[in-house]
Image 1 (tube, rainbow over the protein chains, first blue to last red):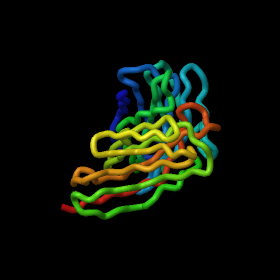
Image 2 (image 1 turned 90 degrees about the vertical axis):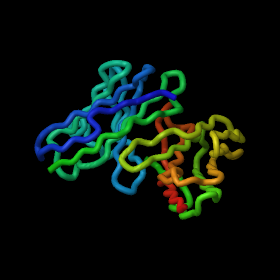
Image 3 (image 1 turned 60 degrees about the vertical axis):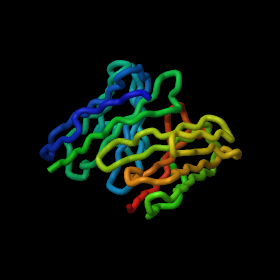
Length: 116
Length: 113
């Protein structure tokens, strides 16, 4: 199957700083990628749809100025958590699917964010 | 987003037993996907289903796309300790854009030797 990577795998930051998380499709191109957030013992919650060359589409209740998404190329999407606060601490996961088969989504390994 | 109804919530089984879990939806789906997630990792795709009635196997795993297109099940036969994890169903409804998935709440599987 297709491989999706994320970097960093873990990050600890101080409150008020910004953190950037990268999501890469390693062996395929992905016009669309998805960003999820997962709290302990819960399911995945879709935050936004990242579209290459255009603005991201955010789910209801997700602040676009708080969670900046940039899909700079067909293999890279970044999520920047701006002015992070402790309540932003969570597990962030991205997914991507090959353009010709987007209904099959492959997930990255996730990024654990801890805001102190 | 809208969640699918996945059951059971958790299962505690002995090694060698079979496991069965299912998901239902109020809307019609184009695709059903089953993932396994282990602690601190992203979900790993186990089986993808694309057609109503489709029955697909992946080793000891078998999943089916329900005829009504509103449900799917996953079976694990002869469970082993490494089957431990949380299993999620996910699907794409006919009204969602490509790639946008709805997720079940997950089934936690614990296998005891």
